[in-house]
Image 1 (cartoon, rainbow, N blue to C red):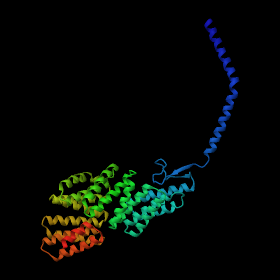
Image 2 (cartoon, helix red, strand yellow):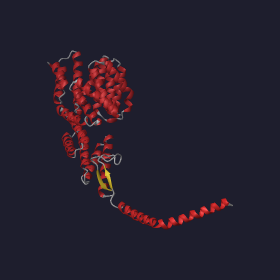
Image 3 (cartoon, rainbow, N blue to C red):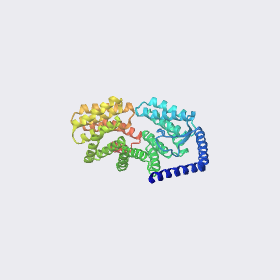
Length: 414
């Protein structure tokens, strides 16, 4: 009985304490409720104001943190919609360039340029559109339009201090002058690109610049300089998982080893090329692989294997309608037939190679083919025809500043 009485008494005391506290604290609770309601409505009213969202210059909208070149536009505003359209045009243009739909890509970038001009702060995207238009101009054989667009893009990137794209523009200008065989200017712009890329650890642009420098030195027979740049390119491309760039550089290194008679080193690269050729999605890169392997097999005396490589090149040429690849394959087939003693067939292939090279205007293929056919004709006891071919080759080499070939051909004609 005493236990039940004590429990009841305790419960009554507890209720009395609750009542007392309620009388003392209820004004504070009401005040807190009022403050909470006021705060809720104030936040709600703030959220109805215009929301600003980043519109990055990069195509990957919203996939990275805002950077120093981003601008902020009102969500749902006409400017933001235009910005998204501009980025969509740029993305579509790049896709069409990858598919080699250059006319469609050109329209995309023209639309991107027009749209970018209507968005405040989108000067970088306008410059990016001009840069790509310059690349398309170059691919379509319009050098004057190409350099004008590339230089304008470079100037505009420089004005907004966009260092990465400014560096990319320098590389593209270097490519332009390389295609124009103005190696002195190309080297100047590519070295300027390296001066910008290396301190910022811009691996992508550094790899592009070093590959082109290696290519220029290769054309000029400056093999030690070419090997240095191409070896660095391979390391950089490997870190980027850029298979096309890696194997482009590896193939050039392989050609240098063949030209210098270092067949063992060329064979090592040949194994890598054959093992990984399927990783490249670029048919031109695969054709370069097959050409290198064909030359390697020819140097090793494996003529059937070399002929198979030439057939693979011709197959790619048929699919891509690339006459330059046909010329290259014919050149290789001519050398193969000459090596096995079928001189008539060899001369037929070499003449076909020259005709295609002249028709397409690809000077290096023409110089190589004329020098090769001159060798063949000399072995057959001819005197006038070889000199005619060597003279024509020298003229083309001088027109395109092929320093290495110029020196070789002058010695042969002396």
